[in-house]
Length: 248
Ligand SMILES: Cc1cc2nc3c(=O)[nH]c(=O)nc-3n(C[C@H](O)[C@H](O)[C@H](O)COP(=O)(O)O)c2cc1C
Image (tube, rainbow, N blue to C red):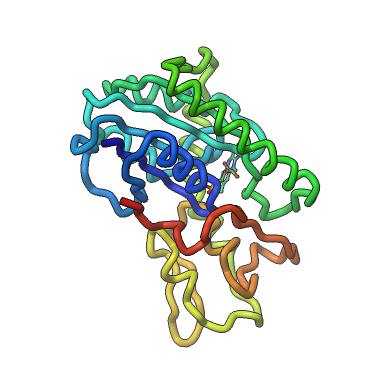
């Protein structure tokens, strides 16, 4: 049985994880709720967004804990530029002795959109192309064409510096008058960084910059600094309620 581990805040990685399950079978597992080492599975897949030319905190923390024997296949997805994230993940996995077989990258709609909007036509065309790109990656894995990233100058220090500043994003969020205190943000935050205190939504200092709260607030009431940006993104091909859940 395959273990298909994913992290996702706006559904792109979940969508790809579902395609992996359709093709190869296995259990889909949401990384933040998982505490094992993957040894209960024969093959391990990790489907993850690229964050700051690297990986989300949850993926960074999971990799060193994984079983060293199990074949590991990683599919990263990104909105604009890989920037060496594939090589960084590969070398990091190798450093921890993992049996990493391949790292593929797939372009998906951008969700790091706090200060700009992706034009609708571009978003639509990226989504349209993504099915073919996902199918091509899965076919290559099926045929044993394991892709290893080309050697690049890794920017690990830069990534780690960015990662150490992600908490600032949460500190720059506030809710506006549209907030109905439904507390969806409180329950979906993967690190419990959001709470309702004295009738107000409060953002703490543990934000991991996934932007799930920002994109998934039903009233678009979460605002970054003073930006009046209206557009939010959730992958339209998944059921939003499945983000953050396992599918066994
Ligand atoms: C904090 C953060 C950093 C990001 N950094 C990058 C990046 O370095 N390069 C890139 O191309 N996309 C970057 N993105 C965009 C995501 O990788 C991309 O939209 C991904 O498909 C989102 O996956 P999800 O819907 O599963 O969360 C970033 C997104 C976030 C939230």
